[in-house]
Picture 1 (cartoon, one colour):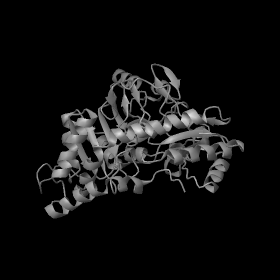
Picture 2: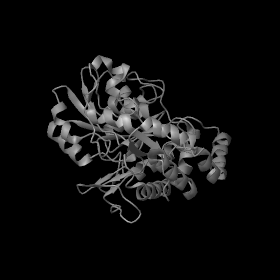
Picture 3: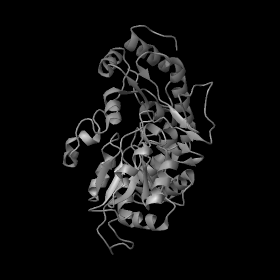
Picture 4: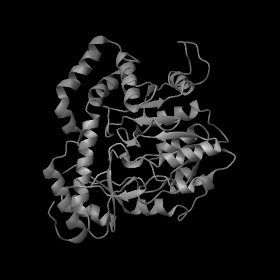
Length: 388
């Protein structure tokens, strides 16, 4: 079976480095907020182009604590997308705020900025764009709207570490960025982990305090916080992996471009597209965007396909694993039934949920594996194989 993401292949390539880093932590006996966490925070901040970074327990906690640091709470509204993982709105709900959805741009799967202003009310405090599948959201438009209305911007960059937007790393563009180190992410730990990045001293100070039970000084607590500290062992692993992140993102892009070139023209299949300078296209090895403009990290390579469930079953029979991210938009989930949404409220998100299919993509995937996926997909869709 060709997997969507094969973490064993990645470990095999750096086993000695990772094992040595973990053994050094064990020998050092410092496991909570130790030297590797501090060093990783500095390295991630530098990588993202931010002044500050605070390691936390998960990407979900990163979102939660970022919202708390902005003092968003009961009675407030946060505008976001319904086509994302529930952690995005979970964090909004945890602080007592209400998510307000706007539909996606069907070309990018990201929040459509043209729909944001209509969703703003006197209770709106922030906009929370998600860089879905590693594709940067339209941050220039989002930032302009936020400044016009006095709103804060929280970037959910859980799937997009390594992506850039107009020369800036995602996560560094809004008031605060939220990263996830879930194992399958572009930079994945050996368990859960996350980080908050920001250029704002006050936001950093509050996150840093809240992540360790709401106290600046040990055993002295100024408000109720939580235990959300990035583990020292995970930080050691991530420091090894961070050195390879740009190389891995380039490999993901190379796989995506090869997919684009081979799959173009298959009826009933919409390929991923990138936006640069107002142009939408599916880049190929011969047709790319300037690196300083837009750099999609391709955490997932997601197509839209007719008869999605049937195609997925036929690919499974051909030993090709696929995933559906995400099969039910958040506005139709039971957890958000209190918001009163109905089918048809956000048609682009609903159409994406009905037709999206993510193909195998990871840095260590071989050309032969990619060719197998291409041939299997073409046959699953058309009944005829194509040459990769």
